[in-house]
Image (cartoon, rainbow, N blue to C red; front, side, top):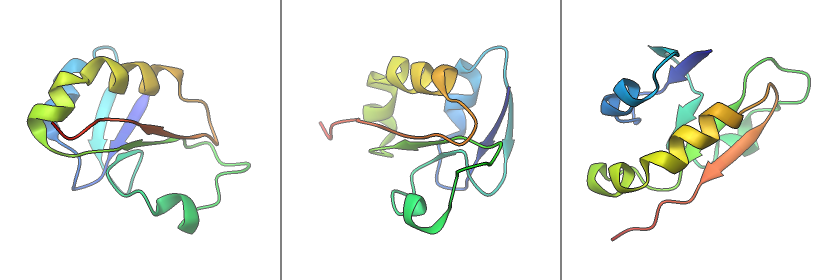
Length: 86
């Protein structure tokens, strides 16, 4: 699967998404929680996965949640991954 990162997404996540092609672009795996209000996904071929927290240590503690959300993403879907601030 092609995964599009925006500029706020940690590049270190890309190494954990084995079997996927990761490219920096407008958004797929993003930290922009308001994107759901600006982008209509119905009928689109892109899925959006939002990280609930962009702090590197917190994201890496919950990397399995991120990987699972990306693997489960379907075209036209929006998913937010809960990552508590610790």
